[in-house]
Image (cartoon, rainbow, N blue to C red; front, top):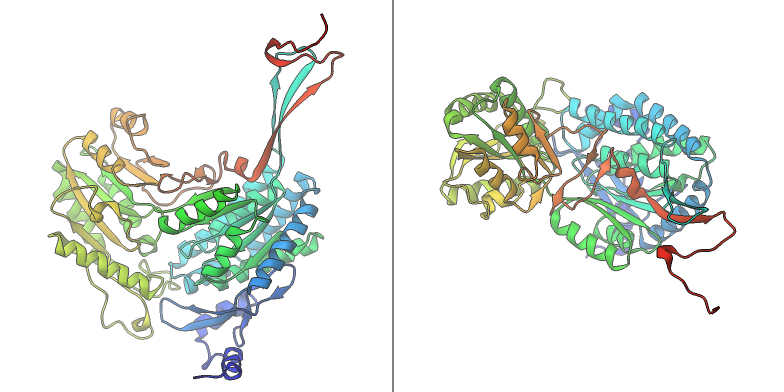
Length: 537
């Protein structure tokens, strides 16, 4: 058995071998020096002395860095400092908070390409998607700048003479953001921008497999806060695993928890937060369907389904998992889609010509295999894919590459696991329908309700799809794929997706506490509804 002293010595040791040049160039550009263990806690100061997290490149299997996560005491201190920072930030005028957001936007934009490359390196999505993810943060910061001057309450007419009623938004407190690996920057950005504009402190607990993205972003944000005399803990960071997440979620010092992740974990997060009467925002599973009518423009629909199912190697919450084709176009559509699938080749996501990167972890590869095995056991036809790539050249032979898969199950039974379970991998199942009403029933028949897409040029189909008997998802698109939402509208899903809304629209209203304030500026004190309560005759 290794002694405690020997184990401690090993934990402090530098990486056994030098980083590849593809990795070291990106990390150094973002002031991340992985020759020694990195500190993964920021509360105004950089610390970290807990469990060691390894950041592993999913493309090559290379260990990029080792990060010292938060101990229970460090989590507690970060929470205390977040609360102190909130007390400072809530007194800063909202337009001034908007100015800070503008500066964060400028700092992020200056590092957009470098951060995008880091996302590709650590998460595995292709370069254009990595840069696009940073652009989402830039865009929502822009949005937050304007929002800081428009987070308005309203005046409500009173039934009593000489009275007015105000609905007033005020800062909420501390907002904890627990983000997932697949969007290691943007989801935090959606939350931070609205939370900061509202006057809250934000504490980030990222996925344990993407600590470098969170460290790089926090360095950029904290530098802006420091220049403006705002405590760094206004945008704190605690890296770690399950225990760190549980400590943050369970803390009464956290007024709101925004959680992005699986349905199973989200269900437990919701119970814990609601059990202590906190606010909770959940963004959970997405088992998204595209429905293609016979009048659809296939020149638009086929590439959109291809991107929806294969983009990010099928690891978006909004990835297309289910494809419902009207019976008259099945062969034509699948022939064109299969041609696109067979043309795609795995590659280094840092190479701008690459369209297919790796799955994020070995565990994800196992989930892919399990899904394909179940499809085969239940008699599904594998049209293309269904296996990992073999004999890839070095260094890709150390990565988590799998073939994008199209499968045609024997029947559409939305209660069956094939249709009802989200597989976070590039596996697309195909069903055939005759009437749109049947496709809508299948679309709505699964537990999840994040994104959906109808392809048609018939306005009558559009009316059915977006109406009360149409798609029950939070995102209901027409002639737009399931994947690739903009920041201007609220993002989120219904049913077991969690009912949460982030980003644009009215999402900001969740990040404030609301008060109804009745003001009496008359010389009388009448009761509402004409109630009389007096002991005089």
